[in-house]
Length: 116
Image (cartoon, rainbow, N blue to C red):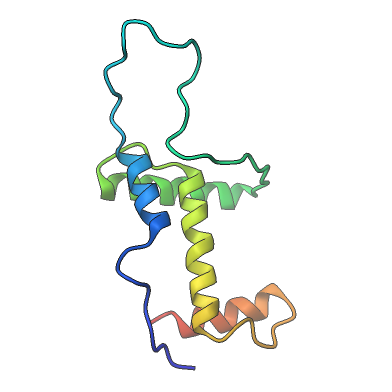
């Protein structure tokens, strides 16, 4: 199946990731509430388990993005969210999951069509 469309120029979730990564610590008022300041937008906690190799990949990609963007505020949640959205986009562009009944078949199908 050929790719006929691409991602729109601006994605709201990408803009939120940018906002979250670029936030500068603002001047704190003389009197403020005790505790951690609230996040710019809500996130829910999800327990994820990674193999040592997956942890290495996540740390490596996070570091590359931090270097590319010139900020150390890129975090694993953003990288994971971006990867989920990218995988969803690729699967949608390829017309769904196809006949794959296991991860190896899905990897072979998707990596061949997107390795250009």
